Image (cartoon, rainbow, N blue to C red; front, side):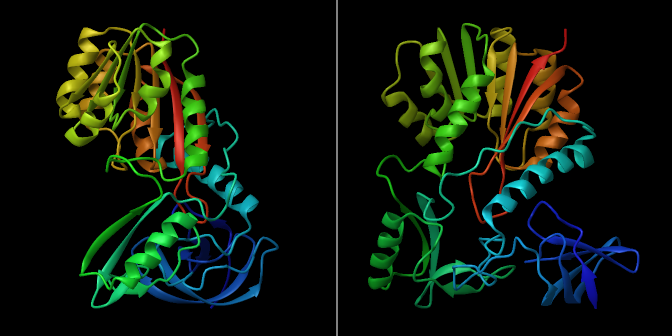
Length: 347
């Protein structure tokens, strides 16, 4: 059937309508007319496969990667970068409205990546039966990958070395930088912008900063000169040991379950500044309740999933005012979006 793409949803698939139902089509752009086949029917929506672009968008470009469309990593290489940014900004705003009921969020401009390719400082590849590469889109089969166009040159050099060694079956994380094997932001350029956005959110800091899901101290190390006391919490004991290595006297890093330790710290340090940077699943019900029971003087929520952010903000808005929403493009060419939400307690 021939369809008109009316939008691109969070996750990267184009949106069309047919027979009264939404149809999701990958590798399409809003404004395009395409020929597509329905591949899967659901109760409220359908999924399809692109067969031919009848009227292409002016934003359509040739993807530089030979694996694009097969590999499950990139979703947007067929879209010029400026339009990727516009789509992602709109997706954050729409997700906040649809999931969180936030009709007019205080959106800030999306922070772009200064480079569109060659930016990832680490990748994880898989080896199986002599094949080294990534999983195919929506499959557990591997694609043999010689070079990843979004990975940094140093990472691709490691990939070439790994392939030459004919590695055993398994998973291999290749990194641009040496250091502790703990979570780090994958795009150094946007990571610096993320630090600036978070730092600017604390306009009038209180003496204490509680950094939940702190990892090796990515945020707290950057902010430690602005606070008299730093309390970092993470379940990963390896990351906590890395944070402790260069900790100053006023920094305390605790290896503990966030659901247990953060409520305790909130009850002790009233009106502290708080950063939460949870995984894609967002905040637990326990943490949402704790933040409302003992509201910090300022709350900065760093999210890698706009949908769970929207869900959590819908609850937190009972006690907090949403001051700013800043999206960042940590992962160009992919559907991923980083978001910083700044909240202040209601008076």
